Length: 68
Image (cartoon, rainbow, N blue to C red; front, side, top):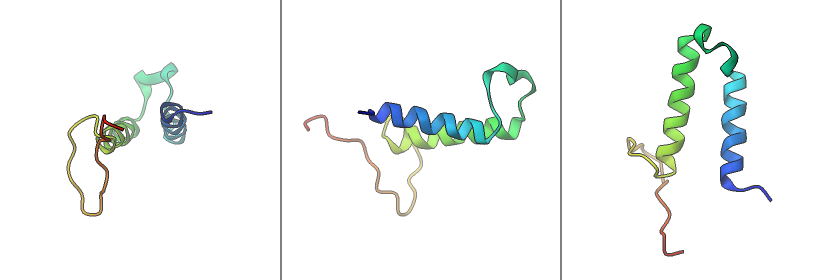
């Protein structure tokens, strides 16, 4: 059974591949691709309530209660 962390890891890996990013040549990576990936990561972390993020209309995400 996959955990949410596994799903996030797989999704992030897919996004990195689509942007043509890998650690073997970060020195030559397209700055726009790196910026796009960083934005994706930060938005996902904010959506999970792990970092502060901008509120967007229609965004219903909030941190889960620790009591559940």
